[in-house]
Image (cartoon, rainbow, N blue to C red; front, side, top):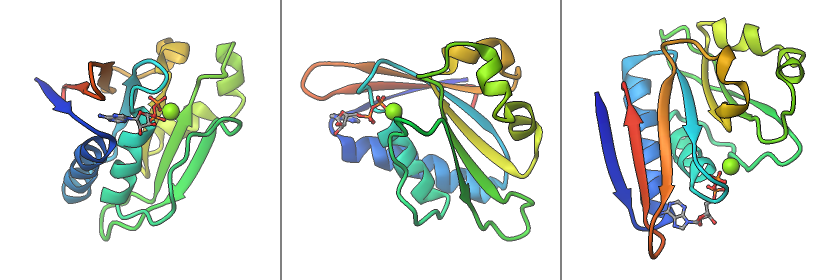
Length: 149
Ligand code: ADP
Ligand code: MG
């Protein structure tokens, strides 16, 4: 199923992310998200809200030099322990992300994973990946489409 949302500012995008984080927290489900959209479309902003919804206190940043950032999560009786934020913008070859332990990260049921610039590593992504598309509209509007959630 596909859901489409329009947000009018960064706060609304954060709230959308937060609600998704809260929903996952309730569902106690380990999932992989792929966030697609141009620079400045709101992927990181969405994930800031998302992390908040998951109960993470630390701030999620745009990782310009860090490709993989790991956050501890506490969701009682869920088996989920970590949130991984990946930003593949700088990845040139698939090998680079594999060398950072990508396979282990996405196959471990303890992890919730969100990937910015997933296009760069598309062939490594499992079928169950949940795709989120970000489109920039007029006057700070963003169209956010979530597939298969
Ligand atoms: P990305 O990670 O996709 O490159 P960021 O989330 O880092 O994008 O940046 C989005 C930028 O756009 C921020 O400066 C944010 O304040 C601004 N912005 C304006 N309107 C929105 C909106 N509706 N949703 C999200 N961000 C918005
Ligand atoms: Mg970003």
